[in-house]
Length: 276
Length: 335
Image (cartoon, rainbow over the protein chains, first blue to last red):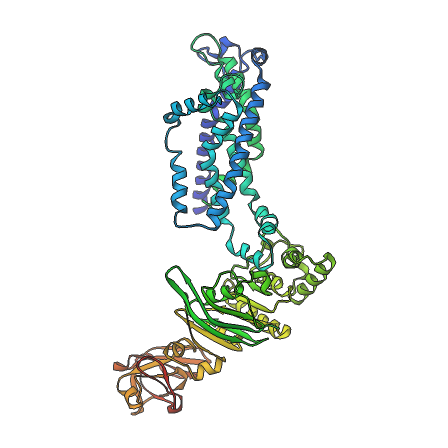
């Protein structure tokens, strides 16, 4: 009896999980499909799901009209650069808060997180003006800088929870074993922190890759990453749905592939601390 | 050599005094156990000796040299942690050899020493495994291996057996004692378990509230406790304390009698009268918990089986030679 009930519960939860999974995935699937339709079919009512004229012409047009590689390169530089700089700042910060906390450590962490509570649009005007005065508008450095600052609180939080999980006893054992701080870092701490560093890096890459608010507002062409590339295909008039879908598919493809191959790492990173 | 001397060692965290001036002389090669209730400062004292905490005052001498400003690794001590604290990403071989590697020993010498240590601890078949592939007892042995391979002046053990199950704990207790005798290295061992303290120690340090209450051999502590705290802490079941009339007759504020020094008489008129509340029959021993009216609950121990049950009236007669006398402030009265 009990076993049957359990089997049924498992079946129901599996079905529900699949349903939600499909629901979340559906827009991406629809976008992928639309990118292979003609503009007319793309917004036909009722829409056709699979039986339409499959065409790759949208991809060709998108490639022709705009420089995908230029924007992809910008995305790589901006996402990669902001992630690396954020890690360089966050590692020592999280380190010191995890291993030599003071009375104020909790406050500092909360204060950092609180900066994420304000909508970015609230500081758009001052940031825009500052960027204008310093000549940072439409520059890669400017975008690297703003995305790095935007994601820093989350990076520090993630690393902090990771480092906190490293038992102090092990560090003390290394000290008793005669390891200097440098060797402790190389032989003991870094190997133990690698999973945490890796998932933080991945998550931050994804966040920076997909960030659209600042990239759209602070760049036009030179520094424009793939988000701007997508946006350039969304227009109030004309038939651009299929091309927009093709551009979007091209834009998210690299990060999707990266995410797919590192999902184990990511899930571990996101649930770390929650489940022991 | 591993002679350790503490002179007026103090430790405070902010306004809180954890160690209030400890003086101690630990002879080379002896096995000394720090015992006391939780929060008494025993682990802090061990960490001060290890160098993992800085002293707030006083001196720590190892072989006559003050080491309070010497970093942990340079003190020539090695430590076994309660949580084992093994390096999870290294094999058993890597774990045991890490200290030697840090000391810059040549590879083949490290290997030779690691293998010798592993052989002593029956770890040879596991040398290439990771800690997560080992059982609790094996992990503990790796932690001990890491300590012995460095041939330290002294071993510091911080409640090393508290994560093991009861049967394994007894076995490891014997192994640790045997190993220490075989190596002849000074050992300081922290525990809250007075049975571990009594069975393993050459000398016991009883700590309470950051102060050393008494320092002596297990039997000295059992036979001549310096005060009420030590009298109550050492010995199981706990010593019976009686105040009032019986104490005044002995010219003391409190008298103490261990459960094994109370003679149990079925219908005697002398001694302390009471009713048995609970009787525990272990076969080898019988423990009686007796409600003695104004004297409170008294515990009596009989070696062997005694056919008495809850509700029976008994009379408990203390062995006059084994009565401990204490003054108002709780210190033992001698003579």
